[in-house]
Amino acid sequence: MRLPSYIVGLAVIASSFIAINPVEAQSGNLGWWYRYSCREGECFYLQKIGGSWPFIKFRNTPNEKLTMEADCQQRRIRYVYGSGRWIDVKPGTNGEAKLKFLCR
Image (cartoon, rainbow, N blue to C red; front, side, top):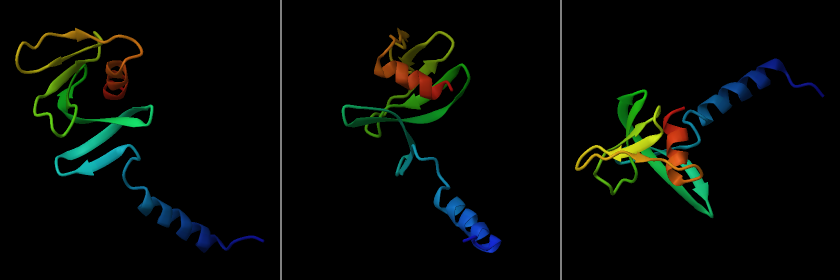
C-alpha cells in the first residue's frame, strides 16, 4: 500500500520539529553542556565558552568556575588562570576525548 505524498511530507516536517537540538547537547541553567564521552556507565560533559582554533576555551562541570583552554595543534590543555601550565594529553585518556570533541 502506498501512502499519499502529503502524509509523507507531514511526517518529514514533524520529525524536523522533534530533532531541533543535537542529541549530545544538554541545556541547563548555565548554558549548553555537551556529552563528549561515556565509559563504564558514566558520561562526561563540557561547555564550550569561546576562543578560535587552535585555542578553544571550555569548562568541565557546572560546579567548576575555572576556565580551561585546549591547544588543538599541540594536543594539550591548561587552566587559564593560576599557573596556566600546559599539560600534554595522553592517548586513551579522558583528556584525549575532550580534545577530539573540542577540536573537530
